[in-house]
Image 1 (spheres, helix red, strand yellow):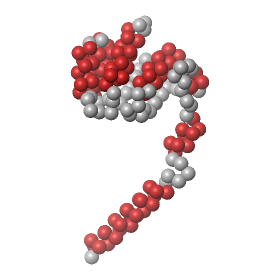
Image 2 (cartoon, helix red, strand yellow):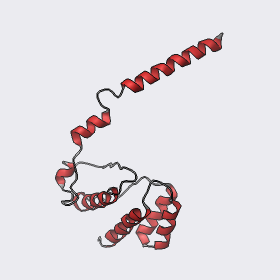
Image 3 (cartoon, one colour):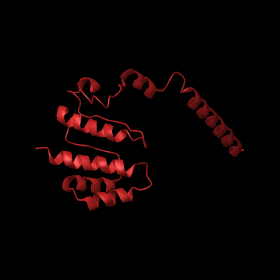
Image 4 (cartoon, one colour):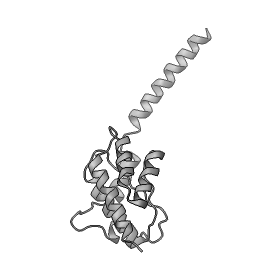
Length: 149
């Protein structure tokens, strides 16, 4: 008897969850509304300027999303890193990486040891990344960093 009541309750909860998921998308999601209000196109020819980010003087963090397997994400990351460092004084980069890959890439950026970079990228084979474009990003960041005071 109890199991029939539990089964009915589970069916009812499942139906309610489906209805909530279907109707919660009506009128656009919070993300869509946010992007419509705040998103700004980036001109890769012109680069970034203060208007791209609005008044960033009081920002303590800047979060950037990404789209996997899109080749323009790597030049965009370079532009953003350079702009944020040179115009906003940003000196730290936190990225979505596994802990091991993050440590290896950080070691490469500190030392320029190509064997470490090769190993890190070899370990990431088959993931959502373009190894050559990612290699170019890390090599660029290493070269950029050694030019900084």
